[in-house]
Length: 154
Image (cartoon, rainbow, N blue to C red):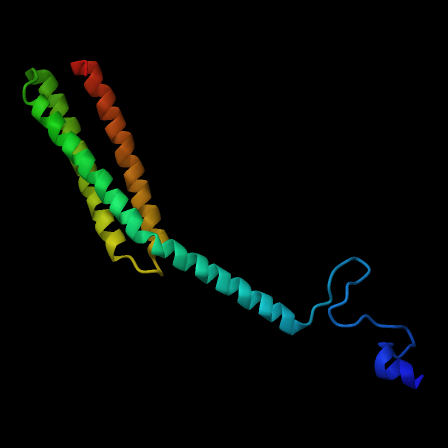
Protein backbone atom coordinates (compact mmCIF):
# COMPACT_ATOMS: atom_id res chain seq x y z
CA UNK A 1 0.00 0.00 0.00
CA UNK A 2 2.89 2.37 0.68
CA UNK A 3 4.12 2.05 -2.91
CA UNK A 4 0.72 2.95 -4.27
CA UNK A 5 0.54 6.08 -2.09
CA UNK A 6 4.04 7.36 -2.96
CA UNK A 7 4.25 7.07 -6.72
CA UNK A 8 1.53 4.92 -8.09
CA UNK A 9 -1.07 7.64 -8.40
CA UNK A 10 -3.72 5.67 -6.52
CA UNK A 11 -6.82 7.20 -5.03
CA UNK A 12 -7.68 6.54 -1.39
CA UNK A 13 -10.02 3.79 -2.56
CA UNK A 14 -7.08 2.00 -4.11
CA UNK A 15 -7.90 2.93 -7.74
CA UNK A 16 -5.20 4.42 -9.87
CA UNK A 17 -5.83 8.16 -10.59
CA UNK A 18 -4.63 9.83 -13.80
CA UNK A 19 -1.46 11.84 -13.61
CA UNK A 20 -1.48 15.57 -14.43
CA UNK A 21 -1.36 16.16 -18.16
CA UNK A 22 -2.45 12.58 -18.98
CA UNK A 23 -5.30 11.93 -21.34
CA UNK A 24 -8.63 10.80 -19.90
CA UNK A 25 -10.73 8.00 -21.34
CA UNK A 26 -12.46 10.57 -23.61
CA UNK A 27 -9.11 11.77 -24.98
CA UNK A 28 -9.25 15.12 -23.18
CA UNK A 29 -6.28 16.32 -21.20
CA UNK A 30 -6.57 16.99 -17.50
CA UNK A 31 -4.27 20.01 -17.81
CA UNK A 32 -3.22 21.85 -14.76
CA UNK A 33 -4.47 25.40 -14.20
CA UNK A 34 -1.00 26.77 -14.90
CA UNK A 35 -1.06 25.19 -18.36
CA UNK A 36 -4.40 26.84 -19.10
CA UNK A 37 -3.02 30.17 -17.94
CA UNK A 38 -0.03 29.70 -20.22
CA UNK A 39 -2.31 28.93 -23.17
CA UNK A 40 -4.43 32.01 -22.44
CA UNK A 41 -1.30 34.12 -22.16
CA UNK A 42 0.12 32.78 -25.43
CA UNK A 43 -3.22 33.29 -27.18
CA UNK A 44 -3.41 36.86 -25.90
CA UNK A 45 0.14 37.49 -27.08
CA UNK A 46 -0.70 36.08 -30.52
CA UNK A 47 -3.76 38.34 -30.78
CA UNK A 48 -1.67 41.37 -29.79
CA UNK A 49 0.96 40.44 -32.36
CA UNK A 50 -1.74 40.19 -35.03
CA UNK A 51 -3.09 43.60 -34.07
CA UNK A 52 0.40 45.10 -34.22
CA UNK A 53 0.88 43.61 -37.69
CA UNK A 54 -2.42 45.05 -38.92
CA UNK A 55 -1.55 48.45 -37.47
CA UNK A 56 1.84 48.26 -39.18
CA UNK A 57 -0.08 48.04 -42.48
CA UNK A 58 -1.71 51.42 -41.76
CA UNK A 59 0.82 53.43 -43.77
CA UNK A 60 0.29 51.28 -46.87
CA UNK A 61 -3.49 51.58 -46.50
CA UNK A 62 -3.33 55.37 -46.09
CA UNK A 63 -0.93 55.73 -49.02
CA UNK A 64 -3.10 53.65 -51.36
CA UNK A 65 -6.30 55.38 -50.25
CA UNK A 66 -4.69 58.80 -50.77
CA UNK A 67 -3.43 57.81 -54.22
CA UNK A 68 -6.84 56.48 -55.25
CA UNK A 69 -8.54 59.63 -53.97
CA UNK A 70 -6.16 61.87 -55.94
CA UNK A 71 -6.82 59.92 -59.16
CA UNK A 72 -10.58 60.11 -58.68
CA UNK A 73 -10.43 63.83 -57.93
CA UNK A 74 -8.56 64.31 -61.23
CA UNK A 75 -11.29 62.38 -63.00
CA UNK A 76 -13.97 64.55 -61.35
CA UNK A 77 -12.12 67.66 -62.56
CA UNK A 78 -11.93 66.21 -66.07
CA UNK A 79 -15.66 65.49 -66.05
CA UNK A 80 -16.39 68.99 -64.76
CA UNK A 81 -14.47 70.50 -67.65
CA UNK A 82 -16.52 68.46 -70.13
CA UNK A 83 -19.78 69.29 -68.32
CA UNK A 84 -19.15 73.00 -68.83
CA UNK A 85 -19.48 72.45 -72.58
CA UNK A 86 -22.74 70.51 -72.31
CA UNK A 87 -26.27 71.72 -73.04
CA UNK A 88 -27.95 73.56 -70.18
CA UNK A 89 -30.32 70.76 -69.11
CA UNK A 90 -27.58 68.12 -69.14
CA UNK A 91 -25.11 70.57 -67.63
CA UNK A 92 -27.40 71.11 -64.61
CA UNK A 93 -27.68 67.34 -64.03
CA UNK A 94 -23.94 66.93 -64.48
CA UNK A 95 -23.22 69.68 -61.96
CA UNK A 96 -25.52 68.01 -59.43
CA UNK A 97 -23.74 64.69 -59.90
CA UNK A 98 -20.32 66.34 -59.73
CA UNK A 99 -21.26 68.13 -56.50
CA UNK A 100 -22.37 64.82 -54.98
CA UNK A 101 -19.05 63.27 -55.99
CA UNK A 102 -17.10 66.19 -54.54
CA UNK A 103 -19.06 65.84 -51.28
CA UNK A 104 -18.21 62.14 -51.12
CA UNK A 105 -14.60 62.98 -51.95
CA UNK A 106 -14.51 65.45 -49.06
CA UNK A 107 -16.00 62.84 -46.71
CA UNK A 108 -13.36 60.34 -47.80
CA UNK A 109 -10.64 62.93 -47.36
CA UNK A 110 -11.85 63.47 -43.78
CA UNK A 111 -11.76 59.73 -43.12
CA UNK A 112 -8.30 59.59 -44.62
CA UNK A 113 -7.17 62.26 -42.16
CA UNK A 114 -8.62 60.17 -39.34
CA UNK A 115 -6.75 57.14 -40.65
CA UNK A 116 -3.47 59.08 -40.64
CA UNK A 117 -4.04 59.96 -36.98
CA UNK A 118 -5.31 56.53 -35.92
CA UNK A 119 -3.73 54.76 -33.01
CA UNK A 120 -3.24 51.06 -32.59
CA UNK A 121 -6.19 51.05 -30.20
CA UNK A 122 -8.69 52.53 -32.69
CA UNK A 123 -7.14 51.49 -36.00
CA UNK A 124 -9.60 48.71 -36.88
CA UNK A 125 -12.59 50.98 -36.22
CA UNK A 126 -11.10 53.86 -38.22
CA UNK A 127 -10.06 51.57 -41.08
CA UNK A 128 -13.55 50.07 -41.23
CA UNK A 129 -15.16 53.52 -41.35
CA UNK A 130 -12.73 54.64 -44.02
CA UNK A 131 -13.39 51.55 -46.11
CA UNK A 132 -17.17 52.08 -45.82
CA UNK A 133 -16.94 55.68 -47.07
CA UNK A 134 -14.55 54.59 -49.84
CA UNK A 135 -17.00 51.89 -50.99
CA UNK A 136 -19.87 54.42 -51.03
CA UNK A 137 -17.72 56.85 -53.00
CA UNK A 138 -16.76 54.13 -55.47
CA UNK A 139 -20.45 53.24 -55.99
CA UNK A 140 -21.37 56.90 -56.56
CA UNK A 141 -18.52 57.25 -59.04
CA UNK A 142 -19.58 54.12 -60.90
CA UNK A 143 -23.14 55.46 -61.16
CA UNK A 144 -21.89 58.85 -62.33
CA UNK A 145 -19.71 57.22 -64.99
CA UNK A 146 -22.66 55.19 -66.23
CA UNK A 147 -24.84 58.33 -66.38
CA UNK A 148 -22.05 60.15 -68.17
CA UNK A 149 -21.79 57.47 -70.84
CA UNK A 150 -25.56 57.51 -71.35
CA UNK A 151 -25.65 61.31 -71.74
CA UNK A 152 -22.37 62.00 -73.50
CA UNK A 153 -21.56 58.68 -75.12
CA UNK A 154 -18.09 58.52 -73.55
